Amino acid sequence: MVETRPAPAQPDSFAVTAARLKARRNHRRRLTDLLAYAVLIAVALIMLYPFYWTLITSFEPTGNIYEAKILPKAVGLRNYSEMWKGTTVPFWRLILNSLIICTLGVTLTVTLATLAAYPLAKMRFPGRDLIFYAILALMVLPNESGLIVNYITTIKLGLLQQTNPVIDAIRQYMAVVLPGLASIVGLFLLRQAYLGIPLELIEAARIDGASELTIWRRIMLPLATPTIAAFAILEFVAYWNSFLWARIMLPDKNLLPLSAGLLELNGTFSTNSRAVMAGAVITIIPILIVFAFGQKYFMKGLEGAVKG
Amino acid sequence: MTTTPRRASRREQHRVGGTGAKVTVRNTLISYAFLLPFLILLVVYHTWPVIFGTYLAFTKYNIISPPQWVGLDNFEELWQDEQFWSGLTNSLKYILIVPVIQVIALLVALLVNRPMKGIGFFRTAFYVPVVTSFAVVGLIWNWMYQQEGPVNAVLGFLGLHSGGSFLNNPATALYAVMFVTLWKGIGYYMVLYLAGLQGISPELEEAATIDGANRLQVFWNITLPGLRPTILVCSLLSTISAIKVFEEIYVMTQGGPAGSTYSALFYTYSRAFQDFQYGLAAAGGIIIAVISIIFGLINFRLTRGGKADG
Image (tube, rainbow over the protein chains, first blue to last red):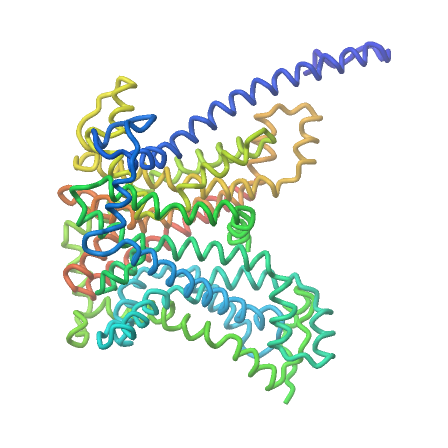
């Protein structure tokens, strides 16, 4: 850098040196860009090839199943129809379960967090700081026995009792979603969003005689929409992907969500991995759709989750 | 009835620019009404497991008959159980992954932080594994690792020795699972580093460049110190999740082959849900919790120590 610094202060030579410097910087920039692309493409291949491989293999009717390949040897939908018909559990039922669990889970989790964050951000009452720090401590404290004790709690609450098919189904769906409903991260995200809302708005509404519930619904919720959207997407992904809790707890395999059901099918379908691959592809698609549409919010929500 | 606000809340009030409503019985009742549904679930599913789990660790319990107080018997049993030790060792080995995942994620974040064409595609591509369920990811990698599968094909192509299925070999199974954790996690930490990078003011980096600092010097003296808080969060998160590794093992190996991939948490899972020894499992859970707290503190110390001179 030092040797290119212009020694004579004549305007002409200044321009020449500047142009040379710029050309050199551009050249170097193009080189580093090329190198960056090379690395990025290599990493992207490692990240995406397993998905791509699963996709193309799921379309192949026959052949050497585990072979590495770039294009499918043949294309057909047999694996998908086989997966759809299912053996022990019908696949459409798993999708239905996942949709119910996601709808229930996301709606309730978002509602609870948006409600609870309001007084913690914008009201004053005895015990507020205590509650806030207690929740904070819970987040830091590792909760390893959670699975075991929650399983015991679920049994003691009678959620796994079997009496009437319809009531059983409702109870078991509730058993799946209940442990996740109080989201501490969500509470923090929303408290953070509420803190940014100007107090004057709330004061004005209070003077106009609006109830706190109205203020929450008419002022807090609309102004916190970006955060709520991000949180809802995060929760959708979490509920859609959850499998462990449901798989451990649910006695009725007909009520398993898709991810958990897929593992079950992998056991029963062990002779036909291609059908399970078709199921895996179907399981990923909704997440990709949600992700494609909500990517901006999603990334923001994730960043906020760490910063908040 | 109006009470004067305590000092702490007044300070808080100052910080958030006032909270408006006065402390009245009515406002208190309204506040608790808003909080109640959340708090009930929080207590039942977050607080109670900590309390009851700690109690269970000192009992024999199989759900059917009431818990029986046995003192430290469970911990003694764990001490003598080889399977538990190998699980614990594997969980600690899993920490090997932490520096690798951090370095790669940071490098990738630096690359996708550059203004280049098509960068959105790469950011998305690296994030796809993160949003995919371990159920699916585990299945996919089970297929990838098959003897005839793509991983062996690539290794063979590179002229490396490719043996049988990685997951069927006790010597390689744990490392094969580790690779999947790494593969799935990079995108997550990349996004966090990206957020951290965007928090560093570009003026500082520009000023350094004008002063004649080269790229490496800018990175070392401006970018890296600016990222310290992010590095702390990321390494803490990945250390704690390494100690608690479970889902990938559950889906890919179930602790096998020959018990070589038992993690500490997988051990407690199998004691609870396969052997119905809930007390023993709870004791294992406490040990894991204590270890993650210790590692969390060490991590915090190390990164904060670095912050002082940054």
